[in-house]
Image 1 (cartoon, helix red, strand yellow):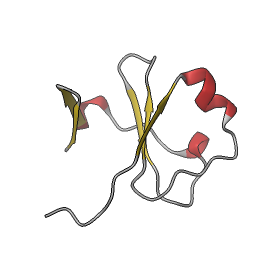
Image 2 (cartoon, one colour):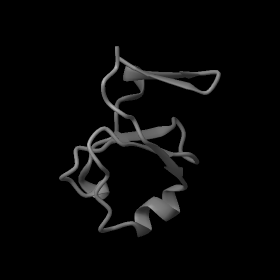
Image 3 (cartoon, helix red, strand yellow):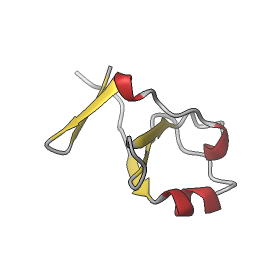
Length: 70
């Protein structure tokens, strides 16, 4: 049973780059919708979005709108 809420926010690369002071909440999923492969970051509640690493595309899949992170 999952005991954490997961928040997903999506926007363009241009708009995420404007969010310089944005700190995603812990476990908040940030999706860069116009990048290929899709860019995904996971917030830790402490780190600016610009300093969060992207998740390696080998560590997630998206099928029928469902995000699975390995």
